[in-house]
Length: 228
Image (tube, rainbow, N blue to C red; front, side):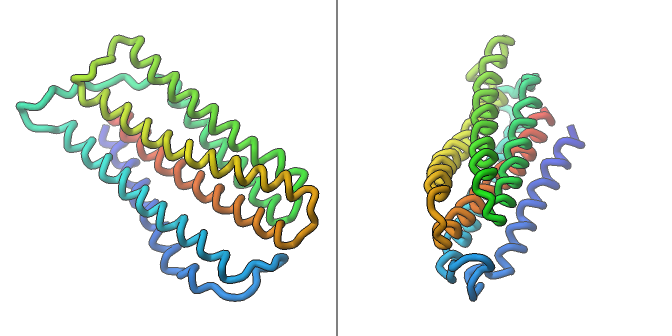
């Protein structure tokens, strides 16, 4: 239990350290034209917006994690905490999300090289793997109910549903953005416009960073769930 909580804490610290380092770089102050494109300083705005949003998301899950730990060791008078046996499919789901993050990183490299033909294969593949992760999470809920651990009066069960549901909703929102970016990629295949290529690179970059971040958050949540 202590080992899992240490992992969760280290993950949270790593996330915050990366955020601080990125913000210290002051991306909003970047000037000049990006190599191979006609992107101007306006391209920094979406990046800053994403990092601010990620800071808010990280704070939200940090609060959930704190509430989880405090409730697990709650005072008498509250509903008793009954530890859950986490469904094994969570390990498979984690592998899906790791694979999605890896595939999107590959797609980002293809975007930087303007290899749109390969990009249109890898980028949607990241979305497919994410859908597999979400489907697996729903299956985990079903498995948990099938084990007889379904009890709304058990705070451990309520927290399990809350944490996985909120994380899943953030991924669903990301999938909507990813789908729009994928559509832009398909349109870009028939256009040699430098501006179009720059927009594609930016879209892929933002999606990739978002997925990496949600992967880190999930690893922290998974470690926390295993601690009980």
